[in-house]
Amino acid sequence: MSDFDLIVLGGGSGGLAAAFRAANHGARVALLEPHLLGGTCVNVGCVPKKAMWLAAEIAGKLSMAETLGFATRHGQLDWPVFIAHRQRYIENIHQSYKRRLDAAGIATLPMRAHFVDARTVECNDGVRLRAPKIVIATGGRPQRLQVAGAELAGVSDDFFHLCHAPKRVALIGSGYIAVELAGVLQALGSQVELFARNSRLLASFDAELAELLAEDYRQSGVHLHFDYRLQALERDGARIRLRAADGVAGEAFDTVLFATGRQPNTDGLHLENVGVAMDMRGQVQVDAWQSTNVDGVYAVGDVTGQLTLTPVAIAAARRLMDRLFGGQSGAKLDYRDVATVVFSHPPIAIVGLTEAAARAQHGDAVQVFRTGFRPMLYALADVPQRSLFKLVCVGDERRIVGIHLLGDGADEIMQGFAVALKRGITLDDLHDTVAIHPTSAEEVVLMR
Ligand code: FAD
View 1 (cartoon, protein in one colour):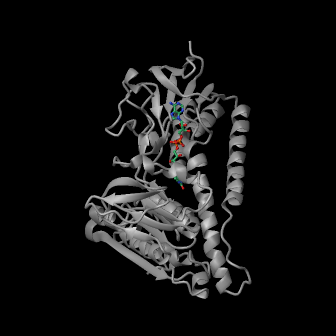
View 2 (view 1 turned 180 degrees about the vertical axis):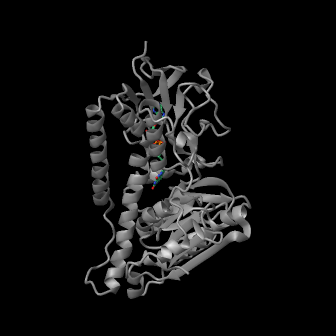
């Protein structure tokens, strides 16, 4: 006897999407979430991060406004006021999820659970639930480097507890979260230093864009330390000092944050009771259909380590439910050509192959088109920040296989071009499209 048709472990982006879609197809669903509904994205990820990014963007625009003749005095952000707005926004999302879960008849339990067998989970109050299908959507959490004193530093979750801009901040890492937090904190009044083990920012992104972004960050006052090997964190009164592998310790910081990757939430799930295969990092192994090696057990989202983005977790979950309960036997997510944005200052948006990846795959058949320009507002205010847009094309027909945008508005420009790239458009198709003037977006269709 089964209590439900489906049990979903985790009420984050992937878990909620799975629960809603399955219920929509008529399934009896139980959703287990021990913390806040919405998971990482809503509570300590995309949503509060974007709110802080918007505050930082406003700060930048305010200082340009003054140059351009507005009588406004460039004031400091009152963090508690802004955070009250941010949290009100997030609370509205929680309430909306609760209403929708009730309306959909989904049994929502504020519990952590683990596997007893492939059809049974046990909640932390000892209650057991059974279903023929179980989805693991337990996401991940930030990880610290394993160095002496690591506990002195915070992680991205702690950034969202800040109620003021710490005077001096060290960010350890060079991926998108490090870059985003560094940009926000610098714009909102901190003196930020970023310490990267790599010799550049954003290793998997286009190298030219990353180089120009590094230049922008330097101009805005962020100190970038590349090829840095951290050995230890040491207490210095109320502050923290970084000691490098060569023994040198720099000045002390008020706040140190690790942005050095994330680990999957699989410990404690007792997956060994079921024999679900995981990789070396503890990520659940799934095939193209989100199926694990155990019949009836599936996984979506960050816990699988596949393109760890909210819309990816949602799309994978919805397609899985369409397959399991909606009679759509061919439904699965195509993980290729997913567009993504780094909310840096200015933002970066990408879709498809980098120039380097395209050359590795297609050799001399690759052609790259680029344009650098100053967006109108920056030119008017005489701010040096420039945009750089790149198209990566392949073959005689010049099919677009990569679009890389750094600059004001890139985050909003990309979505439509991502559709076009996925439809297989060529450079001629872009040239056949009449530009919208004067915009930054028009530069994409004017590139030659
Ligand atoms: P989560 O959202 O992490 O949800 C997992 C849930 O499972 C959690 O709520 C957890 O409490 C619960 N859980 C854990 N263990 C158990 C258990 N045993 N039983 C029951 N429940 C359990 N993505 C974007 O697309 N755009 C962005 O701008 C963006 N910015 C980000 C910024 C930051 C700082 C971070 C950290 C992430 C960001 N992401 C962004 C990534 C995005 O947040 C994740 O890809 C997304 O949240 C993954 O969803 P998920 O459902 O897999 O996991």
